Image (cartoon, rainbow, N blue to C red; front, side, top):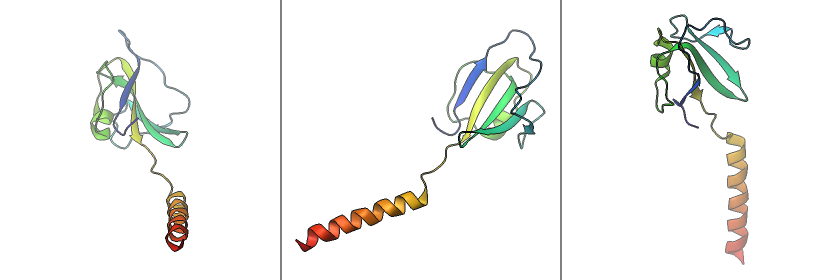
Length: 105
């Protein structure tokens, strides 16, 4: 999964009523149909008036949040967390110790 990936979760021929319980916060550029939530460390937008029907990649969050007039429900992956700095530092330290030990033999 990458930032900007869109997943259509409901293809609907009629209008959508109601929202999911865990999406209370409006997205920053929302026109009223897009909300933001986090799940398992990932930040998502959900649009209850999405006009598209197929999964897409590379969608700008502002464009997704301002899309309205459709009858589909879609999710947009807003952020993928980067690896932790502490983990990378520890890995680098282990690699340097191994290199140093090998060089002195």
